[in-house]
Amino acid sequence: MTALLRYQTGLLLRSQRWLAPLLLYAAFLGVGISLGEPVLGALGVTAAALLPVTAWSVRVCLTQEPPAARSVVAAAGGRERAHLAALVTGTALPALVGAVAVLVVTATCDRRGVTAIAAVTTGLLAASACALTGAAVGALASRPFVRATGWSLAALVLGSLLALVTSGSPAKHAVTALITGARTTTAAPPWLACAGALLLATAAAFGACRATGRLE
Image 1 (cartoon, rainbow, N blue to C red):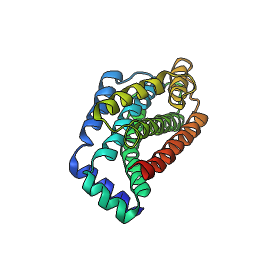
Image 2: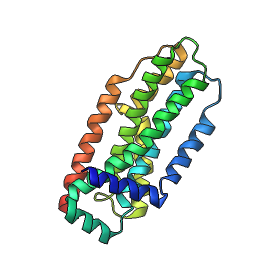
Image 3: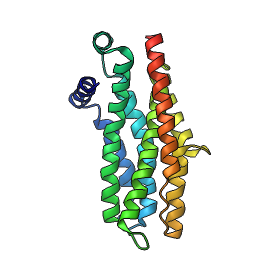
Image 4: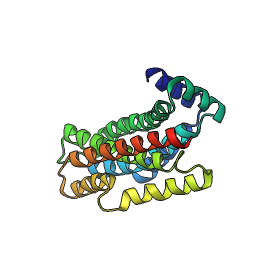
């Protein structure tokens, strides 16, 4: 599995396809956050923006290989394991960027009434919940479930939007906790939302890996 992860990571970095999701994330933060605003509200934007970016990053990793190369890798390492490696790689990069963004936002925004440790803990959990939910959206909106590029992108956008506004979504719960905390200056770490997002991402990854073994 380690070799597959190194292969997928190297392929992603060399292709420079990671630039577009990263620039989108930077644009979201640049437009949605002002220096000196309440830290919890800013962390809510930081986490919410991570969802569509992670979904896009996962789709990039799942579609970056030519069919011939994908067949060779599947033959060498197993089709399901290769698919899982792509999913993990597509999730890890935006999650790492999101963690750095949480630290920067905590350091530059107004922490009145909220300690730095509480803000970082709450922000990292919310970012994790959104990144994992985004990974689930990306896994379900890409191959092997949706092969056509146009339909895949449409499913990606719609799925990301629904994940942010639908009641019961771990991402919505985490972002709502931050927005509510910004009004009351109370940091409430969204542990349950993070755990729910982890279960959702695990189920989506399991289903996608099983499906790719049967459909491709």
